[in-house]
Amino acid sequence: MRGLPVVAMVVALTAVALAQPQAPRTLAVAPLWDLSADGIHVDAEQMNRDLSRLLDRTGRFRVIPADRVSGAMRSLGLFPSQLFHPARAREVQELLGADWLVVGRWTHLDSTAHGDGELDLPRRGGGGAVAVLEVWVWERGTSRPRYEATFDAFRPAVSGPLGLREAAQEVLRKVVAALARL
Image 1 (spheres, rainbow, N blue to C red):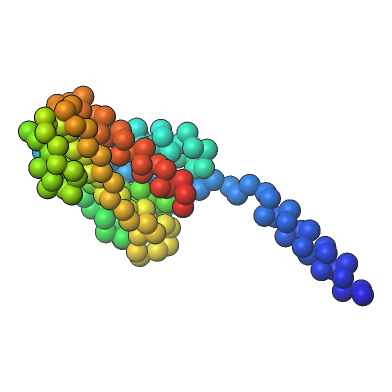
Image 2: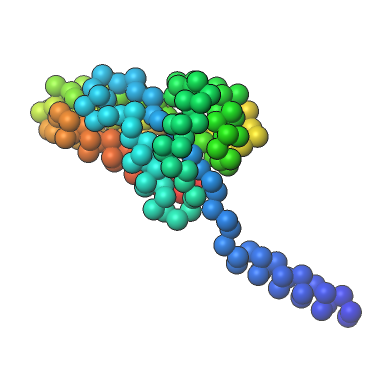
């Protein structure tokens, strides 16, 4: 019978510990690498600022300012394309003290004459804009990405910079939703 109060105390302490909010992860978003045809129209490489802002709004992360991330990369002589390598990502993470480093590459930010199905998006007439972003999340101390995914969006009948911006913003919202669940 003496063990019962001890078990009850352990259960109570465990419940209290689980109820405590976890400290937010420190997260850095690297400038996004632009491999697209039309990304220059929406400043694809600087969209990391938008992604950082959206992630910060979730309250789940302590987001390192984009200028500080860019500065760390410059000081190490690194480009966004190099952050898909674990050793390079680790250098940036260590310099910034980030738990996670988010890297990405826009593979498509394109105005289309018509939805041609090339990206497994439904065939649509009237043109539009396509955005596709590959995202990797590096966790401190690991040599493999903690998370990898590809996000896409299509804006039918809205081509040019406006359509591209809308499609890209939708992609960024999808990224934020996915990362907030990790």
